[in-house]
Image 1 (cartoon, helix red, strand yellow):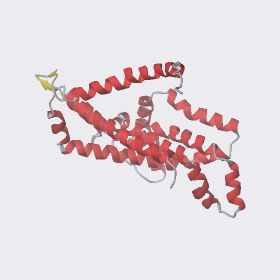
Image 2: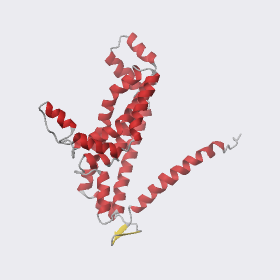
Image 3: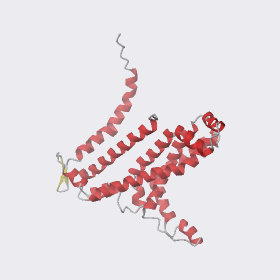
Image 4: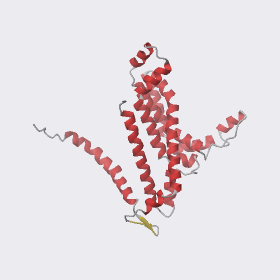
Length: 280
């Protein structure tokens, strides 16, 4: 017997599909088409040529920027996860639900401020005559050059993603059944063994998602490497800006953007499989 078609659930899906189509699929398709256009006399002309792909992917500068961006994004995901984990453990297991909600609210508040404003604040803090070097100078250390370096860019990355990683981890850790932890203690497991064998596997989804969101946000970030990292060596986002300024080469910049999107899709797909996949 054939089931009667019910249009009701599909009607409610329609706004989401239209939104994704108008603001994600259509721009993505246009950018993919743009990557095959040519620039002549500083004007873009529709075409279907692989010149932009050959020129960009054949440049050593592109791959230097790609591996640098990938390395920094991976480091940001790992460092943010390690820094956030002790704080998330405390919020999940040592605070009341009311206290946890207030703490998570405080973590959301920084997102009310423009990230560019926070980056400018770090320029003052990390300057050679700034408060950090002043404190180190009082201890007989420094001054150290922290701006216009990989360290400065990483500080910007942590400012951008750390609150979000703490939120992801806290939600996942707070959802763990406390009876599992009590059972491990009753069976004689040490706190470290309980952490490794019970808590981390049970919170795997939140831990992986927090790390992958940190990777995604830092992989496409422009503010941190430009204003705090000194833009040299350039990341992919800075390479896009430099390419568009060089003879209005928007098609070549589209090539860089598409490579970034494909990389993010690959990483996100692998992360989702790791987060939601079953252990063998």
